[in-house]
Length: 196
Image (cartoon, rainbow, N blue to C red; front, side, top):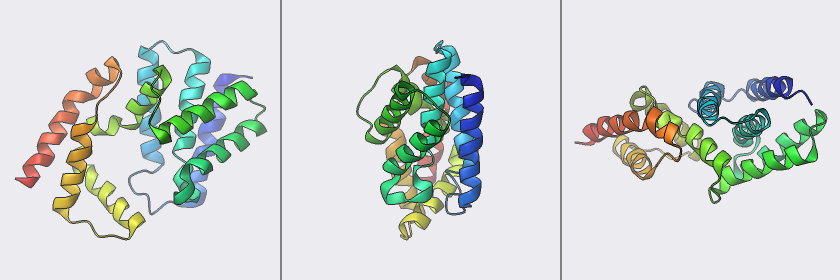
């Protein structure tokens, strides 16, 4: 198994799934968000000296975790697991590697177990909190929530919910703290000012 080529195939496959689904109802969690999340995972993995197989498992789990809601929102975890297993089987990925990818996808949904890969994946998935554009872009996230739930959310409630999530959130890896924590706290301040 050539892991480098396989990583490229996974990226191309998931990108095509996003294009096929025409995910207009996901203006925040779109393919650009997935690409930013993958880039964040690479930054953490390179710092953590993750080997090639570990990087493949981390990236592949994030790619397919992100596809879960594309087909069926109510069963997003099982959708992500099925899409991952089907694609990896078609690429003749070993059963052990498929199992590790599936386990990491499941953990990302359950948010229970915390090991080295899980911490990097959690941090990458929430790296947008530490992005300088988050305080402006969160409004798109709120629009996405409204579209998915068919419930209108007031601006004040949206800010409160976002602030609640950001204030209780913590990065696990030292690298993530160094990269994103200070900007996340600045984003919290900016959102808090909008409430005051």
